[in-house]
Length: 77
Image (cartoon, rainbow, N blue to C red):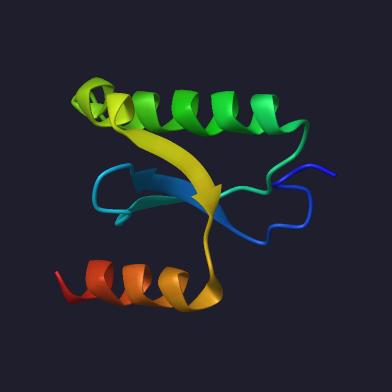
């Protein structure tokens, strides 16, 4: 079974702090390797400074609670 097969939401997480960097806004489809590449490529296209962040980030499942906190943080700005 794939890690992301049943994931409702996925995103990028910092390896050191485990903090959620960004939530991927689309449904994850494909093998784990395909999902990881798709999410990383998508984030790189969104942010020209992403290359440095991607070196210290990994794709992970995002809980509903984390997603709500991230959305709330963005809307407060």
